[in-house]
Image (cartoon, rainbow, N blue to C red):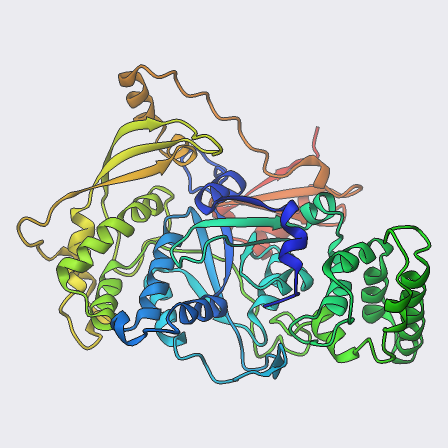
Length: 525
């Protein structure tokens, strides 16, 4: 889905790495207080494409794949995402998405996997919501507004909608966590493709909403055309010009395109394409197609904000193993032994990482996890992050999982939270061997690491440098800047050069409880 040939064009600007490494290197940040909850990367996931990809795997031999094969494929993908130090938010296509896509009618009804998939997402304690229109447009807007840090999707239209960081799986296997990552900055400096010029690629190479394109214009010619910056002028005109002015501009724009193809005035194309210029039809620019790309329907659209409330803070929690075990038993018909084996191999490591990162507890309560560091694994060749191998006492997790098994008929959805204290069948206590990323342990368990490295004769850890709360380069000039610190989080407020007394009265008397906030004047000498 998306722009034909775009992935090939931008591949030189992409980097391939495990998602767990990318999330830690680019997104893991220390909290404002020593030992406080760290800041994790926020990843927005296109839930609709995940369901489509799961169905594609089982187009053949569906009957021999067992009960709900698409759903357990999604379960394994969620399990892999659960091992990543991130907050995940899933978005699904809404009822007001375009009626046609890639020349085919779009079914407005909900996908048959949607309900089961959303129940799994809730059990993993990720977040989700349904967009008013297309999920990729909603995710791009969330990324543009800094609600999320990256978009996980296989639809290249996300770039056209304005996403700044997009990742997609590099493997057809549903459980892979190795991704290709591309940013708007990498597009510009890696392949010389400004993001504003992607609309020109859509027009020339066909997209989801336009199946015509420019006949005879290949990917290379289309990418060379972007150097003339025709797309930027087109987007700006759609945003700011009136209907009458837009019609006049589009006629001139098509004339300029034909002239560039026929004459190549700046030499960006490498040769002249007179026949291609003659092939540009009079109705080459479709206003409806342009508007769908430039102003897509999202929760932040002016006509839509009352019905669809924009997403606030993206925050994951620790997994609800009681609920998840009940779903696995009911939907996949797994035995209690199979559930424990799969949880042991696929979930315990992520559970330990989430507990270390101090994610909020789920409704079933917290899990007192005990682990011991066994071995230090240096940064592998081609990797970026060192790891520590450890073993985890998984009996609290096993107890929680068993309390969700054999409850029947969805009773686990409304279980008593005290049920997690039920006894574990004899012989079920076991250790799980896990790998934990070094940056997380070094920040959250420095004392344990210091003792381990001393015992193993490893060099001591260097004291981490404190991270600035806000770079000085981002402070607006000519204003007084006040930071409010509450529960380890900071916000910059520009109060238009007020006096300190006015700031104190405003913050403490109107906005926030005085007992929880401290006001700091960052401009005082």
